[in-house]
Length: 196
Length: 213
Image 1 (tube, each protein chain N blue to C red):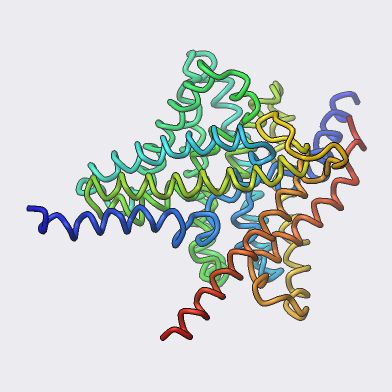
Image 2: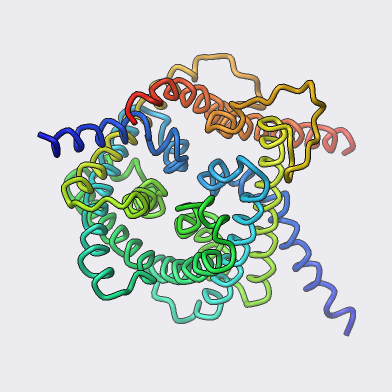
């Protein structure tokens, strides 16, 4: 029961309160780049969720079972980035085979998941927070993916309506998106202090 | 001799200036947003971050430029990433050894330089096509442009959030610190408004140059 409690709290905390996009500024590039349409945003979110769950789990295993045993913590970043690149390659191959249209519409942003800070960031945060059970690492990684999907979908929904709004000429595009993101962050700050 | 070197010097100067303003990584290319937003709550971490990025950018551009003829096209991104990861590890260990508190403030954002799009973008767009000197100059221009942007953003946020800059009081006593500027909200909104301002100046400039012609 206790474990379940910790897992549930960890999940809610990383989805809503410590959301990677809103509070840690991770994954801003796709957050601004792919949030133009809600279906693409959702697809991107799912791809990221898959990659982040896979790589979060794998890097935890590599870090705890191989690197720390052998005293090779120095090579941690290199190992992490290799795992992530491999996971992205996997998703890319799968998407090209089964969802060619979605694959086309992502274009450059799919390989760029490798350089999505949210993924490497989460792997580093798991390491930093000293998570020491595999189950918790898996739940946190999955939660981070869900949190990212939620953030990018909310943003896409707002931006679809923003197209109809009368925005000053010089603020069109990225600036207004950033300001919207700021206000959205403010809204999510209301959840702070709910847990811990 | 002097005449011969003139065009190359011009090219070097052009490359250096491109990174500072015309192709400024943050304002014009919208690259490297995550660290831009995350470390700019105060000027000191922003400056440290900028210096780290300059170091990694220059080193990785040198290595990529030296090995550009050996790269296989489908493996090049992987090679870039591994090169960058190596230098980031060096920078991270250096910070941990000589500036522990700063290293703790920056936290995971130092290793996150690996996935900073600026570095991989410069490796791909410049270093893998150009010679050593141009690559180094390009890296310096881009890095300094990035650092300056970071510092300006951090200075605005620090002054508004605490009324201080480098721990020196600059605002009058009556100034009420604007706590929100130190939080994520401040980062997003300040950067958004700055981008808008840059767009506005550029448009005005374009307009006035049209009139002159």
